[in-house]
Image (cartoon, rainbow over all chains, first blue to last red; front, side, top):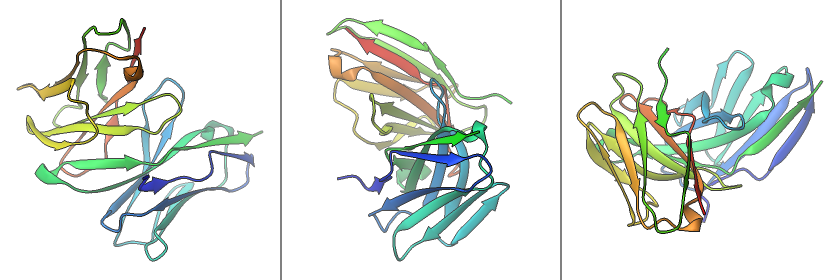
Length: 115
Length: 111
């Protein structure tokens, strides 16, 4: 049973428009959420995060929204650029033993930004 | 800036052989994580170490073991390899409860 779900395996957006990537989770104990971006043959790269005490975090073109009651978060990219084309993973975490954070990943959404 | 270093980047093994993957975390990071990403799948957490001690365990098979050494590098040992072990293995490191920084991964192919 997947605790973190990204229901859209792919998304295509025109350059300059907004990209919205969605993520749902089931475990209400998650207290920290992250978005990672992954290019082929590379490891995931941290993009932006949000704590469960917030509902919005913004960093340049990237904004993450968290709706705890709906157990839903989304990543907005405005404006989208061709270089944003990659697989985007949503991840959730909770404090586990020894101060280590275990991430639970969604299955990823392939974003393609068309020039 | 220094990143997480993984070696080897590619590894080909036969069934029932043994493989060892190495991970060198970002300097001063105290936590190392191992993730396995099979073809078309999301990364699955295997195991983590905090200050050289195992801190959490995920879906790591009994055939696998890992440890973190005094210099904070970590090794993932995989024995009796099976075809299903073919995957991309990511190591990540973090400081305290900060964000995880991933290496570029080690691709294991089991023939």
